[in-house]
Amino acid sequence: MSEIAEIIDSLENRIEKLFNKIEGLENNSMALKAELEKAALINSTQSNQIEALKSENEALKITNSLLGGEENKRDTKLKINSLIREIDYCIAQLSD
Image 1 (cartoon, rainbow, N blue to C red):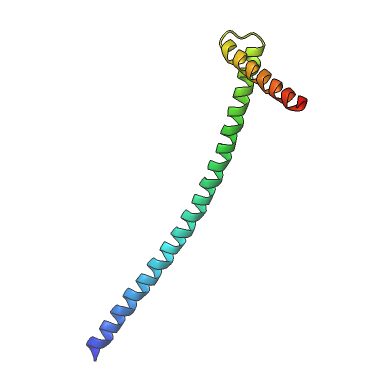
Image 2: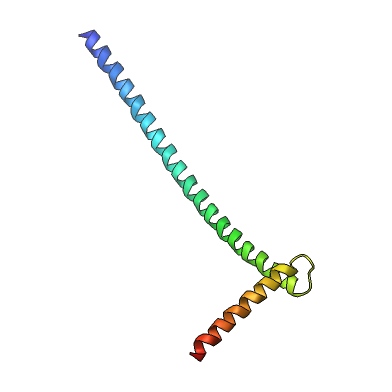
């Protein structure tokens, strides 16, 4: 009978260790999920900032070229020609 009691005690100890390990893993999992959500939020915020900076950079390039910057004169001329074509198309549509 003593052997059976020892086996049962051993099993109980192992089961308790497993439950403790499961609880620790669940806590770790929850912490990792929270960290992942935080990282996703930071990533989203930074993506929005990047897009805003790209738009601002493009606007600054156009402004610089309109103010006489030598680097982007060709781009400015192309943009102005594109805008003129769009205006001419709109006028033609209104005339019809």
